[in-house]
Length: 227
View 1 (cartoon, rainbow, N blue to C red):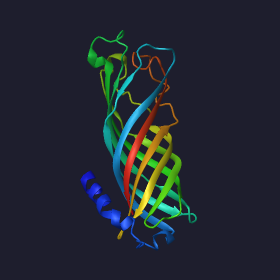
View 2: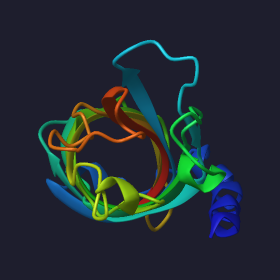
View 3: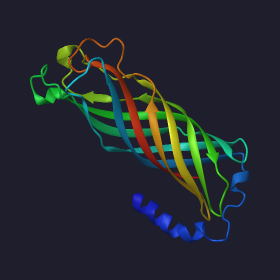
């Protein structure tokens, strides 16, 4: 997939910077639709109840984003964008405090996440220059986290333990619209930051979360959008 995207970018260079203006009436549409595919990397910010010499480690890996785009024109520079999608990822959370654990396996959570993501974003586009147009996006989003935790939790009454299912975020993005001959191609990079503590309030006392005050998700998305 990424090889195809790279080829598209290379082949489009002459079109982007040529004097011929592609898709001249594209921005006149009040409503436009598209789709995106991309990669993500999820991380976590952890606030502790007391200072610790053994902070939690997050082993990150890349995941995949896929979704749809609906964009409403407000004026020549402002657009309202709704981008529902599915974001899949896997990461390891390593608990480095070994005092309460009997073996290494106890210190590891493998978290498989399938987030159904619903962002509502305001897009500000600069003036179009030939066949490209930079933009900024910002807004709020929510997600349903269908996560699964693989770890030895049963011994502490946490057989069905999960992080909070519903989460809320704010998002900031930068990208460029490239007007090609038959479609618009829009790569972007986005930061996603949760604003909700993901440790459930009714979590029983346990070695893993007893010193965690707040647990937040952070992520970086690199999306390739097509309209």
